[in-house]
Image (cartoon, rainbow, N blue to C red; front, side):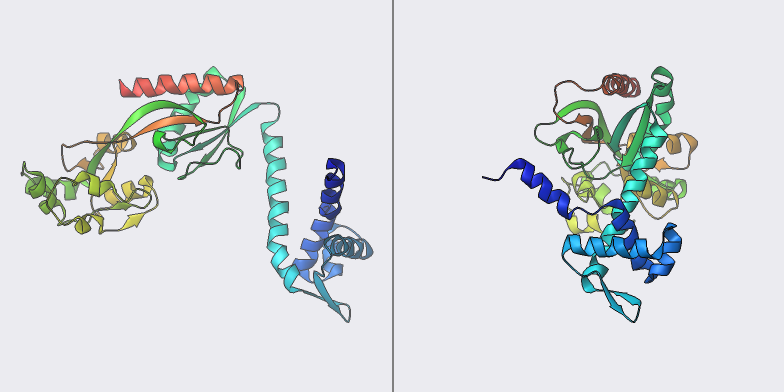
Length: 314
């Protein structure tokens, strides 16, 4: 049976040092030990030794050498972007640690348009309550895997909460059909039908803007009608609701979006509803990995978020 200490020693044996990676990347970009040495502020011999050490460590040739000229081998060419990414990730991590200092950090993943239009505008009030907390927020359309990503928390759809996680429901989503004021006036003039099939027939005369990650929304909206469902899925497709809103505001067609994401546009009159109907969508939730207790900052944020969601619902 292998000794764990021996396995750790073996892993260290083929793990490159920082100086080896830096020398390889500099040589890989310049194809010159002289230019790489100038870039790194080292001697040419030091750069050459670092590259040779890396090749010996990996047991492969990363460069072809001919008449004091370098060219990347196939292995070196394949490894170069990975090595650059490793150094870039390290730089970002160091800068992030320097920026946060001794503050408590909440690393949060959130649906893009919900973050931009609902969460971020409210964060100032939390910062007043907990000035020692700093946020590192990333927009994510997919539910992150807490085991493989650095996130502490996520705001996502409740039904996307992974097994074993803890989910706190925040608020229900209600979708409405919206368009530019000019297009909305035209559609509202046309759609006096009380019958869903008739409304479907009239609305499908106009472009229906599609949300790429939730392609079923228009199908759900017109689900009980007798119209060919293929007609509901035709139209420009966009990656997230923020793009759908922008397209609708520009007059490209009719968007089906969560009401809470367009409250400002409806109030300002840059978008109008084309139907009085509202369709229940998903439930937004705060999702966190299962664990025995978490940082006090997570608890503070959870309590504040629940209050904000309740205030919005009221």
